[in-house]
Amino acid sequence: MESNSQNNLIKNLQYSAKIFLLLIISSTLLIFTGCGFIAEKITGKVVEGFIENAAGDDVDIDFDDDKIVIKGEDGNEMVFGGGEWPAGDAAKTIPVFKDGKIDYVNDFGTSAMISITGVTKNEYLDYVEKLKAAGFTENSYSAESEGSFTYMAYKTDTHFAMVTFDTEGGLVITVSNEE
Image (cartoon, rainbow, N blue to C red; front, side, top):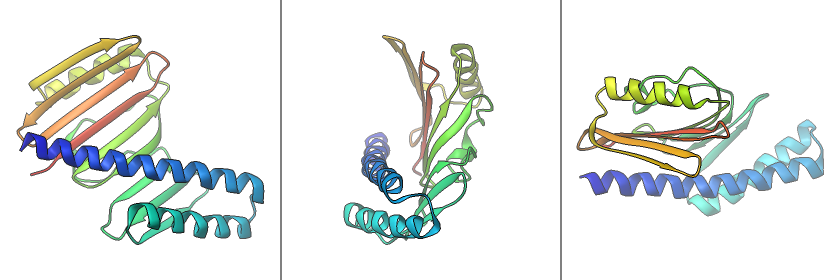
């Protein structure tokens, strides 16, 4: 079961990478076409077409004032900006990280990835302790390499969390609960 969860996470991360590349393309289109309503609609349709071709899903893209929301036909959504903790089931199983600024959320319901900026090493270490207190202690793994710190552990055979911090203040939290 452990490899199934990891395979699903890898699949979700590959999907996220495609979406991220397409968002870079959309940002470039916005820069070159201006920031008006018509440019936004054209860019949204172009990006939606790219994403549908890459992901093979029917997707809906909403450009709000402070965020971009991409929602697939299966209900999974990715949010860029907005600064909100994800609402999916997996994210509800881990402590909310209250420091820094949330700048990216990938919420697939049973798994989620949250990217946060403006984090200190002490805030990272405090969060690791909160994960442990929440029961994420089985098969734990900690690593440190060239300014990057990682903690990963399981709560059950199919439920794990991973948090990675870099000394430039970036933090990524990944959680998966594939029951």
